[in-house]
Image 1 (cartoon, rainbow, N blue to C red):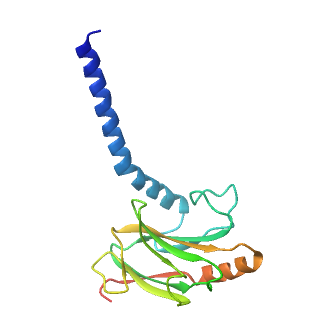
Image 2 (image 1 turned 180 degrees about the horizontal axis):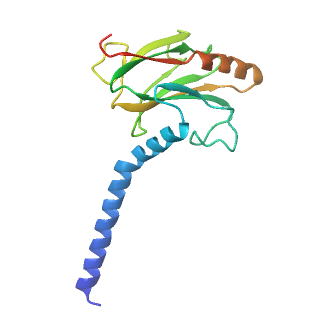
Image 3 (image 1 turned 90 degrees about the vertical axis):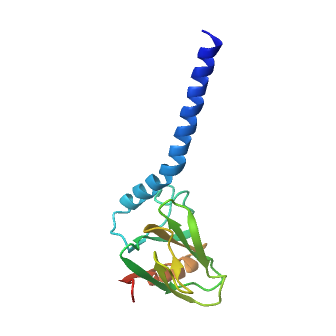
Length: 173
């Protein structure tokens, strides 16, 4: 085998690896999002309350048994969403994390940022006004996590979880 042949095969291997890596970086996050959305079994713009996390629950990547989880796979292509709910007091951490369909986070709100006990905002794909959250694309997911380290906190977390609502509204309203 000549040096030219070895270099040619090596170059082809490097090009193949670079192309495959690029395809994985570009398409794998969208595939993960589509699979998670499909596994939820719920229509878009519907809040899903996850059961108590244990070692068998893998709908959330690396689930933490000290958290109560809710999620909403959304589509703001034709409607905006009004997202409302109540945070627990500051003895319990709670966050709303917004992810695009590429599973990249683009906005996070938690109950330590503001003294307000409730939240009410508009999620939109179009130009937003102050206080609105603009989605980077048509689809994504909102993930709510509430820390609950004992039974009292768990009951409070479940009560807050039930207040997490998502209501579609016309984009012009």
